[in-house]
Length: 195
Image 1 (tube, rainbow, N blue to C red):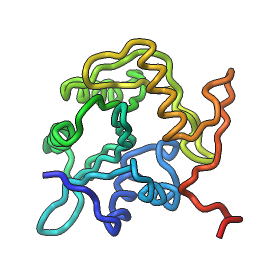
Image 2 (image 1 turned 180 degrees about the vertical axis):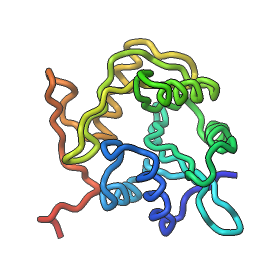
Image 3 (image 1 turned 30 degrees about the vertical axis):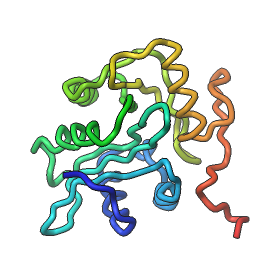
């Protein structure tokens, strides 16, 4: 059964993140941890009850319009046991409305398998051009696709999702103007000049 993460478990979550994602797909520790103060950001975990080891986690942004899965990973020690499917199915029971997530283009066997996994779990691949803005200073923007539950999205719905993610998750001040994406300060991370 999945449950909300307790703050003290964040170190385990970040370790799984580091093992599961390329560096351009997650924030530095302090920035990622600072998101826990945001009311719309939640992490759900599947714990090993006896040892308190986290078997899997899903980090989501809950919005009125939809829920965005920002990170979803199974602890390498527990992979290939069907836990990813368990997590997604339980998450879908907790959350009403559309869920979306980002995936890499189907350019290699791993990305094709990942897309197929999400499709088996009720997600649809929307093949509209999408760039994930740099998740943090020093990180690179990434060409990705958006997958959604509740069927594929129209172009208008896609643009609404992109605008929501750019504004509220990535904090970009304007969408894509040519090849330039301008970011603004994350309000949940203290700057060196703030108290």
